[in-house]
Image (cartoon, rainbow, N blue to C red; front, side, top):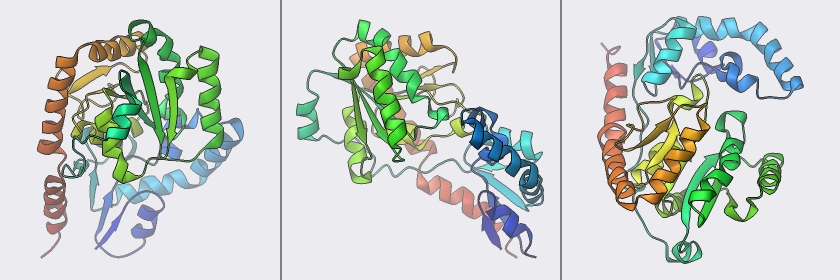
Length: 298
């Protein structure tokens, strides 16, 4: 048996006379996610079009011929069905709830005392829409003057960082933005627990359907405001709030609503952690994965 993930791993596995199980996080975004592709400069878009011309059919063929396809949730399963015309089985993403839990750091608490803190994670790609959140800060600030947006990142992109800093300066919200940068994994629960709200404004045909940042923040009992590209992670009105990707006024309104209501945040945060423990625990992910793989063992 061979277990592959994304292209070209699926194409390599396709050439071996073995049972092939593909864990497809999403259809290969550089070929199939037009929202992501159109966000790149002209030269990169041209390169991706050329690569798609030569290789996309191989990606599709390999996935269509896989003996079984696993994926991260029902949202990505729908996209796999659309692109590859194949059904897939969601395992969901796993979160270590013993590690990601509510914790307090005295230094961070003192540093941001008296402030309403929003946390956002980015890789500076157009899909994450960090710029959209920064552009919304002036409207949020009208209602929440003691505001602080902490931006962490998973990719070191100096141009991306500078672009966000310049945008904040243009919007007049420099003092409300802090580019925290890369946070070591052992400190992530500290930042998630510190935040009053986590915000995920990301979009995409499939990439936005699953976010570990969202799930880890929820495990730390931090309610999330996110796009409705996924309706599985955050249950709207229970463990957080959803907004349509194009409804920026709705995003601002829901962020402000949560920041103003301490009781609501606490209630949603508690329900968020319970959802992670119920659906996104590693034991459940492991069980689904083992059962599907075991179906090929005689």
